[in-house]
Image (cartoon, rainbow, N blue to C red; front, side, top):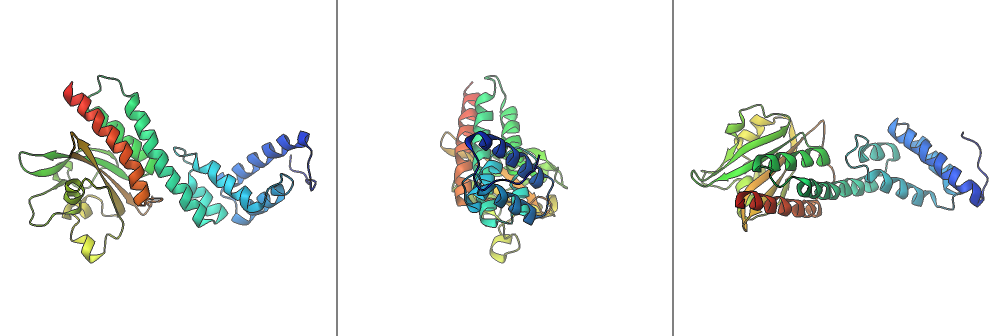
Length: 266
């Protein structure tokens, strides 16, 4: 039970103090208590446990960053501790963890899994880890020279899935650029004149509430054969996406490409 703490605690009291603090800070963060309450709680326990309050806050941030697939994500930390820098670092850690979780899901697939099943697992991993509104897999159609959406997880597009395709225009859009350069992209300034003209018209029709999206090419036998696409809306904004984040997801895309090669070869 909460009680006044001495300035210094004995080794026998330490475990109890840590347990009490863990329970109370978790309850405060998850109940979205005012930020000053969380800070006061940290200040109360930091000294007796031999830590500076700033160090204690960093430990809490690190702990919550590990809760990647939980509904209690780093958003609670950003709100309650009012520490944008640490919250952003936690969000970036969550993106990196998403890539690792995706690799684990790929390697856990049974040998007989189909290409559709492989993409389904990949998209679900991105949806869970990045908290995107929707994720889709685009496949290169060499016969007609375009890129077509074949599978979607999360919120369905407002237009027909078959209408999500890129190619045929005089200028390459961002989807084609991502595949031609085998380069992952994070697009956030959707209203910027230089960017908006390179975004397919169907994008706003399919997800009119979109605030950002990412593109992650998948290489098969050294060539970009597919493209993973994830979109965020205002209700679930993008967090932690940077060039480094995309690089962390590239490792996941590489494993996905290898798994597709195995299935196609089989």
